[in-house]
Image (tube, rainbow, N blue to C red; front, side, top):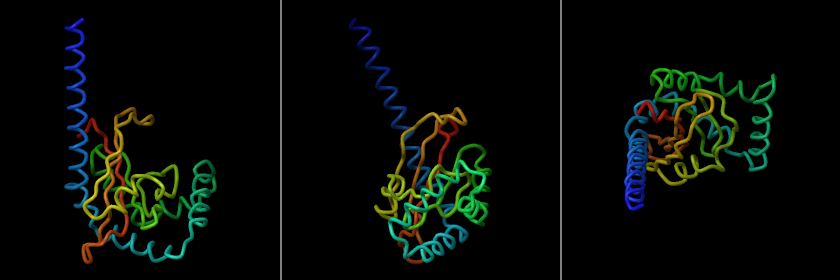
Length: 188
């Protein structure tokens, strides 16, 4: 019995240590690797433009847009989704994802309200402002990093986690949006 308990403690400690190392590696990725492509003018210009365009949106209008997006994910008519997927930022994010050689499973950039500005793949919703990925980055400042839980992705059958960081205007140092990257944990 004592051997079983000791073995369980040792295995639990190893699993916890491996998980902690993965969380640290994911946070470091968000801090050190993302800025290489996140500071591209394509990202910054699109976020600034959407912040300006959507400055007067009310919460009820945001919720209506989110409902429209969710309905479009299951429809043949997808004007809002296609508007986002067809912009230059989405093309850029798809390129970044493809060049990651399987490390990134998805990338989406959000504005100062938590609305998608561009994305490599269609997200299930348009408004991320009610979720930790936006709240724990955009609202917490330029150095914040949010690492979601490591989960099995049903479509790829790979373990992944979402890593989110703020989009910062290098000229002013102010947070103008946020980005979330799905990271294939097995590829770290």
